[in-house]
Length: 444
Image (spheres, rainbow, N blue to C red):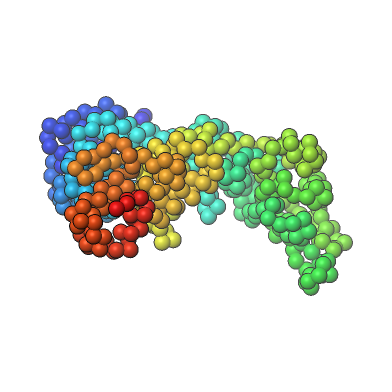
């Protein structure tokens, strides 16, 4: 049975509130209207939390209600409904935790928000998720990734090697960790070795260890990853970068389960499941002898092909939500949520760096809290998400950029372009004002 998200409309005039409720219900959501901000503050402390709040911007009362909602429910999306609002109030609302700001009479914007919320709620209900601890999490709603997850769960209990292929940043390590977690080896170590990070001799000693005197500086024996990972799983990342002679030694380990340390003579037995990952073109690597055919055919019993993010765009909102929740409020990063416009930009972006780039985008947004900068970082072209200052524009920037730009320009005009006076009027430091002037390219 489908779950309908709850949208709460707060502080709108009765006639407009009825219109908004109708739009919200047509989008597949449940709607609840609250006429007073005091009632909204009470409702914010009740359970369950609403999925989306449409909050009218009526001076300080609206900001107080916003504060109550944010304190009670960090994950709830809050969008301000503004009509001829003081730009400074819009700025305060955005800084106070509002996710976006739209024109209160804009039916299209309200309908779009409600539909986005309905789609997001449906996606959450259909999510395929696997918590892998510090190694990350498998999070997806797309059919192709669910099929990949099903294959991993089928293969995990076996002992066959697995080859993960796909572009850089698509999440190949996450798949390898998931394979380990659902295998009979999950109580033992999972180790990752980046084959591209070390030259051949160092990589060999890293994998297989060495004996004293094996090379200059080797004064005591050192076990390698294949010893340390006995009965566990080892991920050989970027295996296409491993030198061919070392590939031959690896092939013998896969066949015999035995190896010798660098400079050693004693054969050491090991029981390790190997998962390999590469972002190279396999056919080209085989033709150029960069990858040994015999090793490839040993590893490709099961091939997990991870599609790039641009081919599974339906995963982007859920992944962004996961990263914002995972990093928000931790390691000194505040808790924030993206505006609807920034989310649309993210879904339409090409993401050449795939999931890794998406996670970095989420971290950057949490650090800077600037929707315009975050959106520009994702798309290269900031666009309008919201309005500010008397004439809320339908396009041109995101909510915070539009609000701050207009507020700064208004303050500068009121002070005859005296920047220090404008900073005092805006209640920000002079240095911050100069930074904003440069960021928003405000000349004068």
